Length: 302
Image (cartoon, rainbow, N blue to C red; front, side, top):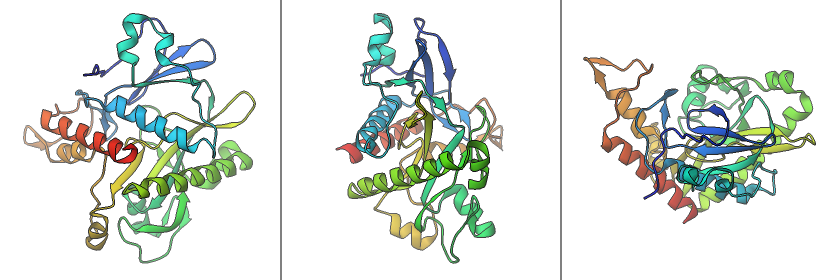
């Protein structure tokens, strides 16, 4: 059984940042060791209990997708073994859950692509028939497939804050018209290619977010992780039609178990207020969540 890692501790490299899931360490001036921990965040709060195997599953999935999408956009992988940059006594924390990547200049835009109406997109559509300033036809229902995939960017928020949906015009103001257009076109191409591959394996990718950076030559590079259940809404095709007909959310491969449990839990008779500390997750919830992540990986890559 692989080591479970809630929070990594690599003493041989300088820590750059801890995100909700990833711990990033500097490797010289030009590379980063990205370790996917087994942490889970829900409602932007990090849970105290790790989800066994989650970091390894996320890493396997991201590498599988990077492998298939390289023709559309270069990615940040160096191709070197992550284990090669840490001390022997630190290898167990790194093995199977890490990527050794190029250090890029990150672009402060979350490139969100939606092929289906779900989550905050559905809420926004109900209010004004558009998502992030993109007008949509009348008469769409919850989880409906959109006439075509749309680019609905968000501005990256500080850790612990919610990313904020922004218009395409705002992206142009932030990074210029050329780069904005390149990111929009590349994101939609990545999503459409991935959605088709996933559908052949019985999975719908409702929406996803990509992160990009620029290399020293100013080339656009796909970075961070890609198309995992942490950054994408995956639905199995079974149950989708029924959900669509009844207006409910389709079953999904992600942390929905945890979210549902947190919505239902009572602390001293009151609902949890979604601020730290998070309630302690029972084993059954962490196990079921781990099983969902495993099922997503096996279904996709099996």
